[in-house]
Length: 67
Image (cartoon, rainbow, N blue to C red):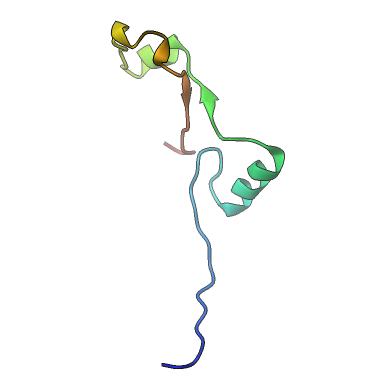
């Protein structure tokens, strides 16, 4: 096949954006889609941190909309 071929399309699901339009709006505004997670949130989700982790734990998450 010698004719040029272009496949054009974009789809994505990223933290803080359900589609590429929302993703681009977040990029333009400087939003990362990351959210802070406190100890109560972790307990509610059944997450128990090992005390050995200490201050190496970063309390942020990158949730996908709808999950």
